[in-house]
Amino acid sequence: MDFLKILRSFEEFVFEATSWLIFYPLTMWRILRRPLATMDYSDREQSDTDEKRYDDALSPPLVLLATIVLWNLIGIEAHVADLEATSTAMKTLAASQQNLILFRSLIFSLIPLIAAASLVHRQGKRLSRETLRVPFYAQCYLAAPCVMVVSIGGIILRRADMANLLGLAVMIVGATWFLVVQTLWFRNKLSTSYARAAVIALWATARALAILLLVLLLLAIL
Image (cartoon, rainbow, N blue to C red; front, side, top):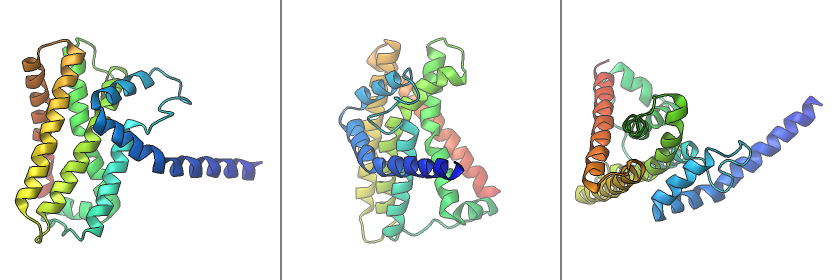
């Protein structure tokens, strides 16, 4: 009986893992093509049952994690030089790819977390896991293309045979796209003006980046 359970579990794992090959690119295409509609889709799926939730797409945290893993592997294949570890903490992170992926997952989750918390606060709701979950999941969809753009720009900047200006241009275009979509998202959710939504989006992003810089500073000196 236990052996049959193991076989069924393995069967489910194989199906789920191979289905990513279809649903990951489809989900990323939907995000890039219609980001706001995809974020609204995530909101609706949160009210569905566990069995049917994100049945025709990959869930937002998985999209974010898969993007981080994918571009980490691409960076390795592109022979991008690793950043020099100058502290014990940084050496620990650089000791294995698993550590780096986990760290990058936490870092790239900062922007979705801060943006979701900003929305909950401005909606006058009590901050809790329940109120934070829906906007956080939607924001994870938006964060996935950011991971891709930052990774592409970083690879270009760290390769001696490619122009740094190209890498900067990729990052600027990606950041502009992100802030425009983020502004529209806040405007729709808060029923406010474009100008106020833009300020909220910029302030949320600035706070996330400030926390990121603080974390990196602490890691550099520990």
